[in-house]
Image 1 (cartoon, rainbow, N blue to C red):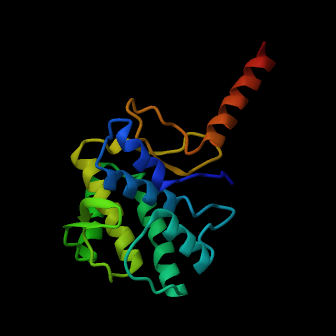
Image 2: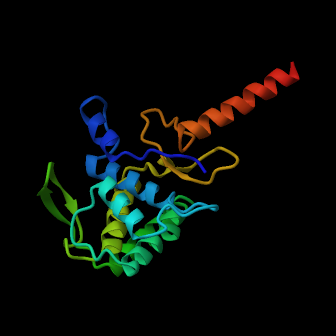
Length: 198
């Protein structure tokens, strides 16, 4: 399994240093959605229990009410295949899926400011179920991606043995792998192949 570092704070720290592709809350929501999708691996589940969900929620800074039980965990885990599908659909498919997500959760976008964040969009009340808040945050972020004509930034890792999803926020659309370890593994295999062919 690939060890990934999905630090939400790396995205935020970079705001002052580089031009952002999307608004800070959109980039954070895209990163959180990709991280959530990638918690489901063929050989393991990184959201195996409520404490794992607690760590995920804390790491990504989710606010609002929590039930902290297995029902909440099951609801969040059920989001993963739905969100993963967004990385595999064409634009019309993404639009239909996102619209369905927003309708089913009765999303109502509003500007809010809390903690260290200035005004940004929330589309569910803070007491909505965690899974609904996660789904809507991802859907709203994908709305920005589609509106900007940047759907090609949602990719699947190009390493042959990895199917993790990637959000390419690089300026030149160059991110191909989900992690440095996948990139290093592919580069090392190419290096060995060149060496053996020489």
